[in-house]
Length: 189
Image (spheres, rainbow, N blue to C red):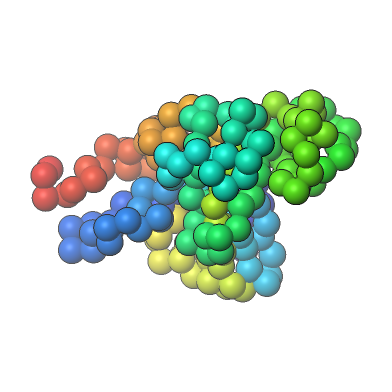
């Protein structure tokens, strides 16, 4: 399979008898793949705001996060860790920022915000991440659990994360566009 780094994984809706388990972080999720190779993949769920203040876990960062200004659940792995996803314009490297692809990078959350924030256009803080072992993600894609689509710059920092799943699907072509109309509860159709 080709490298999926920088692409989006959009969770396929679950048909009738296979409803999501309450609180399933992947139900109607949109995942930005941060790294993908033969050993596995990891990424961040972009549309799971937790509503908790960032300062509750990372004092000093609250005023710098993009709207909505709350902590997000990046996935089910390592929920006790935090990752700072940033948008950094330009091609220059910046102190305290590891550029991953394009304008997207990770910020060193141990660095003082005053050092790294002058170079940052947008910031979102995630608790945990999504991870797959070698071949696991490819298997999930083959079984139809995920749609793989191109990311747009605005996806990672949308001000309306609850609408992201439908928005990403609506901008696709063909039948995939229609998936956005799939009801959350198929029995209500």
